Length: 479
Ligand code: NAD
Image (tube, rainbow, N blue to C red; front, side):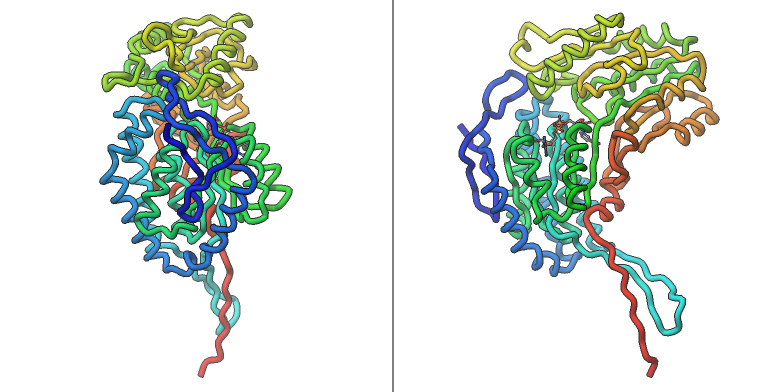
């Protein structure tokens, strides 16, 4: 059985215990994860600290050249990475291939930033005095990622952290450690100095807090649940560490009475079910005008019933990441129906040939109240809840009635409604006539309220997370 160790200073470092890595498609064990303990974490910080200064002293353009090489190497071996992701995350290979492409695109964007890592020059209020800002690395960046799209999740954080001149201590999600191990090795082979990129493998609850609290961590960037994000913010806050939090969502998808209903149902289905609903930006609250409610719901339910589950090339989506998450989802559905909601389609674990995997049927539920558990909590699975709205004002009010504020979309033919919505909805991303998800590597992504702490990654805004600005004043005596 393949053992996945931590990777520190380019060396494999094992922990005292191991845990199984399962293929969510059939529950089979595909590797064992060597679980890092505090000693392993110490070694990672020591390696990162020792290597960081030389990396920071390497011109950013040169750092970019190395990262371009790394992207070319990933692209050349894209099929290998895609197969790893498909297996460890349990998804169709075509989806994994798309994600590998996304990771490379993100890597190239940040490699190019090595040529543009600019500060600003500004006028001074004093004669012969010059004022400017420069970017400097934070130092050691602790990066903690989620399991849903493991290759892009790696790229979103590692590439901007590296181009800014930081050394990295990465802790990938324990469900998808193999792709992170693979990508880190490819980056090191491409020329990233070994101590600059360290991977600490282990269980989040066990090893995560000690990484966040470590005095050697200068910046912490986390993608994951709001619950863990709050813990990290508290720990990092106590030590006044810089922290970037990309957290959960409970994203609204609004269907107006003037929408193209076929198109809306297609996008609704993609928003709710693609990647088994495991997207922070997935649509989960579908707010539909009374006037088109039945016509839209007929189409949406038909689209849900047409979803093909599995990992074949003709499949729409695979399992959720683990048994625990599946159990949570089934519990939430049961709780919703006990409170009076109705399941229109789905709602059960998939049996038959997929019984061993962590599969949930595409599920659509109506009749939950806005304050019910189902409406308020992120489930991170293929579960859509429907709500009725009398008019635009009520739809907007419902869309904003959420503890989260990550993404939202509206389907309408009215430019007035569309423009009002994108400005008034309390989210970090707003979309017209498409899905709730869809982020491009050059665009800043992030949310409001419980979806984050105001930071944005990727895009050039990620450079603000991974670098510190320094004000420089230069005073001259003219000859
Ligand atoms: P999670 O919070 O359970 O785990 C995320 C990461 O944190 C993992 O690496 C895990 O090992 C680690 N972790 C767990 N407990 C920790 C602790 N106490 N201290 C430090 N690290 C700890 O989330 P998940 O279930 O793996 O991922 C799903 C969540 O991620 C959803 O809420 C989803 O919305 C969110 N997400 C957000 C974005 C975004 O950009 N906003 C993108 C993808 C996923």
